[in-house]
Length: 107
Image 1 (cartoon, one colour):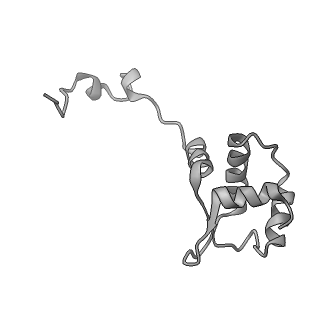
Image 2: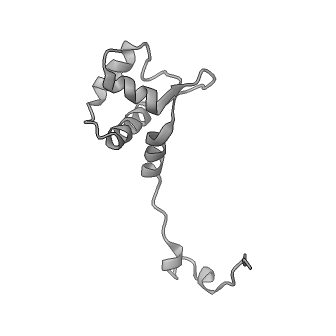
């Protein structure tokens, strides 16, 4: 791989797992790459440049054994999580929570 930019991304945000059946999808790879770029104040390059960099190092984007790791992985996972309603602020979602006695009391 000839790009220090992509080398740094792969070293910091992914690792190869030989026991994994299916590695990251293209969407997951590019998503964690975008998270890595944002966290490292790097300009994101097009997905096609990432695929070319992966191929240059011998990794096929559609058939890899890569898993995400590190802070960029956590950011990607959290950013993609669905937003949950705040039931304590909305008595119509869970009125029993507002009226119930605490289950655990710390003394």
